[in-house]
Length: 426
Ligand SMILES: Cc1ncc(COP(=O)(O)O)c(C=O)c1O
Image (cartoon, rainbow, N blue to C red; front, side, top):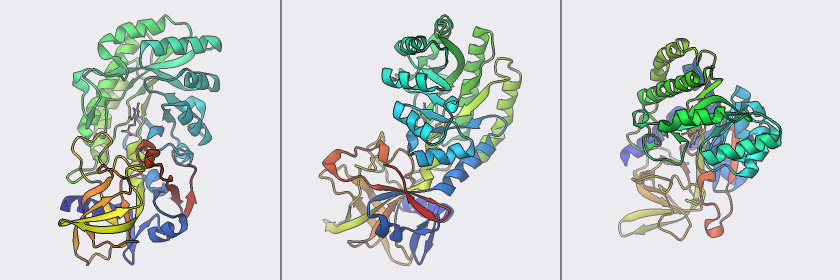
């Protein structure tokens, strides 16, 4: 509980600030933004996203390019921030394809992954142009082949691999067990041969995404090394070098008490040995190595701000009932894949620091006990009209939430850049 609050305080000290006790984002006052745009709302700081992109790109310089996984936050204004930094995009639907194009990403810099791609989406990217389609199953291979044949094209594809047990890591394990994502590593050679036999497909790459929310540099480096070994195996089998090796995203950010931020210095220190692996492997020597993080780039830059509608003291527990909740931010409520429900870092927008802080349950307006933003956030005393902010809310927040549930309005989304706030497209 105390740690959860100190995480909020640490994040505020590192990335935000307070003026007169009022939380600022990119130099703008959250209380003023709340007056202007109404509550609840999401606010994203463009400078923090650029900083994260540049820091990661610098840490892996000479080894990998950093693309952006659009699913983390698909607003074109946000994709554009990374596109302007030089990022390509990893997309998982036709709508994400359109968002990436609208943000100025060139079609050849877009990778299309995801199981169960629809015929309409395959058609859309084949006709509009795409860097690579990442194949995840046999039916998809057939449907991409058919679309390519209809257009008289040869489509560049990569094989997404569901890795064996040695490649596990990250909080959500996606390898070494049965999975709907990608082809099992055990069948890799057969899949390679099958693609090679299709004249409308051109096998150019391998894709390994071993898990999300990885906070351990050594685990990520081990996964990347594993991906390079698999890629070398594919290059040897097809007897030509690969164009790309996509090592996935999965770089984590601290959400909970006790989480430690990913150590970029440790990542940087591991890069030379990965570069050596590539240098001695003819099938990889000319390959473009790609990382496609989402959460790491946008998560820390976003806050969800809600206003307290009522406070209630029930049988010894303090409740702040706000106008924001799980319909906008399912992850903060603990209902997006968390096994143990723990509190996201939550802060009062006005906190002069000297007031007594006590545990508050911050809940939303929905008629369900699941609608919780924090179970025991240490906050100064709250009253109706006060504002609270949920930090680490820039990724997998609004678009990963049941926005239709109980038919409440959508929140505003505001991008702050160079001291200016802009309402971004919904
Ligand atoms: C194929 C693929 N790439 C990239 C990502 C982005 O992951 P993260 O946000 O953990 O970096 C995901 C997330 O599910 C994914 O499925």
